[in-house]
Length: 324
Image (cartoon, rainbow, N blue to C red; front, side, top):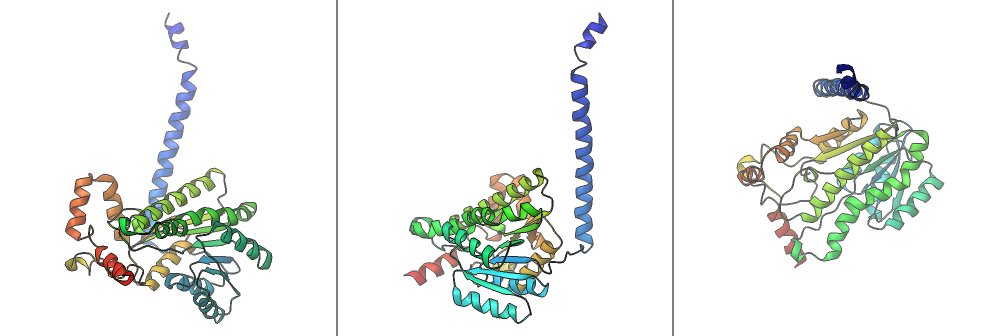
């Protein structure tokens, strides 16, 4: 009687054991990952060489893009520079060439998908296969939602988010063929938590973060471990993009706007160390976790205390004054 009853559960026993073993292995992986993250925080990571890599940087004519170009040039990478501002892009190219590397500058409007694909074809034909992509370009409308022309809202989403899809479709196939490459997404802290009056920017950066994380998981699922990904989420950078943005004055010294050079140098450490994600400064991890763990009212109270709920209003007012 007992044997016939026990036989009913025998087929399920192996499956249950497999799940139990997988659970134990997952916990071991989890512990190992946490230990590695702690060690990376305490010890400087081993940085890889990018000498000879062909690195494409979007938004290369801007402050961050120019600094990224110069930092990669110092590391010996060949550069492909994209920007919609031809003069600014050529200026970056001249500075990088002075460091002794090959530089190829292209005028590209990232808000237009066909421009991306056409420029990608030119790069492959004229230079070769890109092995590193730094998706750095970004824009913001700087207007209140109901007062903002639709085309400005669309441009923010096209440049900050949609372009990531077209860039990846243009350059990832060659990386996958060699199982070698690196895709970097310069997102924002406002892709992890939000503030008021910049709905277009927050939406585009949340989209960028989601796109990047899904892509990273896809590459892992396809055993394309030779293709690295790095997500960079900096706080407000002092490059003029959000001029006037400020939190409560008593707290500004605690979280000041980031200097562009510091932002790029910290990003480079993460990229060359093949770190999957970095928030700059590390303090940004706190509101990111708080957003997930605390109730809405608690986060709102914190935002109000820090002045984060209205920090963009001076920036918005300044932008609207220029327009009028």
